[in-house]
Length: 476
Image 1 (cartoon, helix red, strand yellow):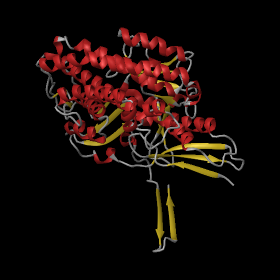
Image 2 (cartoon, rainbow, N blue to C red):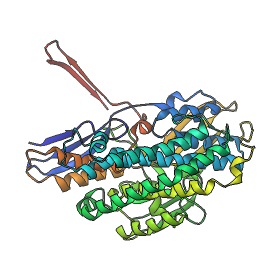
Image 3 (spheres, rainbow, N blue to C red):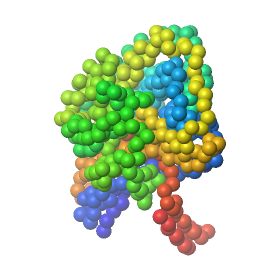
Image 4 (cartoon, one colour):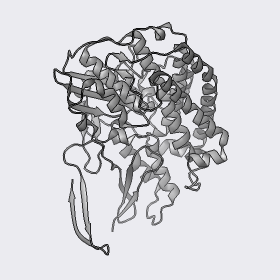
């Protein structure tokens, strides 16, 4: 007899998913899978819309990371118009993306993941959440909420709204920022720095007592992908693609974002709506790669700001070449928050932000364009095809969470092997939570990530009035 253990739903993530763990006849873990069971279809219903609508439309994909789609979409529009974005607009877009990284990383660390290592893996699951954190560690929870609010305020000061700001457009942005808003950001920065320092100190203490999690929570060789600047420095909006391996060696570098399709293939899992991208030159399974904070810190040569670079040096002590444990995604997020605060501070006295020229006007000059930006969860691709009138003919969205799909499946399987003893008949909830936490390390955003490829999977059951199964059909 074989057994199947299902964790449904996976909690404290954005979206709906489940995990299946398969045990063989001896009770040993035979395999595990991460299934994304929600379907969106944004790519299809964008067809026929004007190019100018795409940033505002695709921002509606998600309420957690609308800015990421807004900015990647605008960059795809820039390519189709073949314009040079004004310097003020480029820097304002960067400022908004920094705010987005702060707010999203703060949400992930304080709200979604901290309950596990602050309250404990074995704590009551009814209280192992942000409300339990508020009850037992009120100052920490409040500081996390305020840090996220800081990032949201940066977004609102630029785009007029914290969520779904229809602000970036092909060619630039709709509006600038007032000096008073920059002063308000500056006044809030000392508090944001203090909260980040508290979180870094907290997580370093967690690392000192969680070697088992470091060793078993998604700790395996893989490639890493992210954007870097011309000198290999940390990049979040612009730059070119770099791949490194688990030893830290560069595999491919300075790849133009428009050429991403030459390097990335997209496989399909029958049991999930989430695609499985891979590094095309190595195929499957060798082409598995990771994106996001862990990958960005692995692919960059430096961050370029003093506080974050000091933390980066400490972070790299946890690897041999590259840092390969996915449990260190949490540390990488905090380092990126610190980097974002330093970058935001550097913008406050930049006169370019106050220049009046914010948008370059042009008609349709290319029928195809690719926009790439670093979302909090990793590298995000928007690829559009238009007709001569600028109406969308086809869309491909390659989302950060999708880029991590193969690694998330590998993580689930590794954790299942590590925490479920052979022959187990009863699996405590705390052990299952450790497996769930492997997914939380990646902070997946499933609303962004799901779209159709081929036939949609369907399981249809016809039940009688008494619940008897009368007929069953399965497709996909």
